[in-house]
Image (cartoon, rainbow, N blue to C red):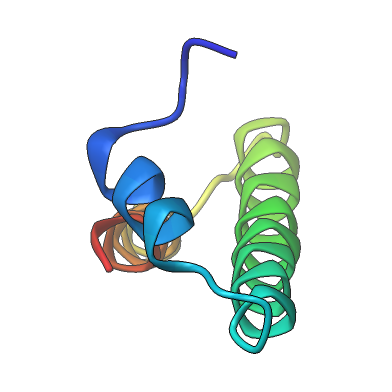
Length: 68
């Protein structure tokens, strides 16, 4: 609660009985993909020789997925 933006609310308002499964799948896919990226980010931060360029790529991927 408190972290869902207007786009998410709009997507939920569009759902019908037929579209409900599609929306749930989209949300689950997003959450799984972003969770994987965040785990990679957390792992990278803990490395003594962290590759900053890889970190930036992962951050951009999270940003891109979140902007859709």
